[in-house]
Amino acid sequence: MPSNKIIPNIWFKSEDGSISVVLKYYKNIFKSDFSEGQIISLGVTPGGYSEICEVKIFEQKYSFLITEKEHHPLNDAVSFIIYCENQKEIDKYWDYFTSEGEESQCGWCVDKYGLRWQVLIKNLSEIMAKPNAFEVMMSQRKIVIQEYLK
Image (tube, rainbow, N blue to C red; front, side):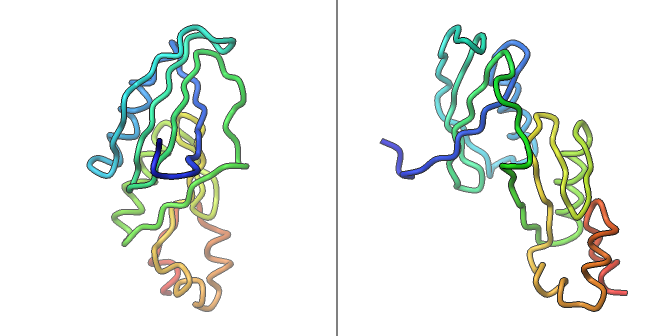
């Protein structure tokens, strides 16, 4: 039995229902902060060929379910905030997720699989206490810390 009583399940679509490409994509950005469990084939389901795998990202458990056909597309109702130490780390995640995904505003972006991320600075409350911080954030796509310090 899993150690977490509740584990978020994220349902992705992959052209052939193979989970390996999705695992590789997230392993590539999270490196040693990403680990995967056993890949379990669910065979052919109403969503086409499907696989499932439990993963950990920064020690938080998730279940990744992959189907060949899109059943329910990912949307803004579920998203993740990633708090970064500095601009270099913001740039790392932002550039990776948006390279094949989409930019939005206020640090929000969508990765190539449709998962929503908000890439923020760890000390967000301090930054947002600065004069005009809200206006600065509303004008940004990627968070650029230097713009808050002017």
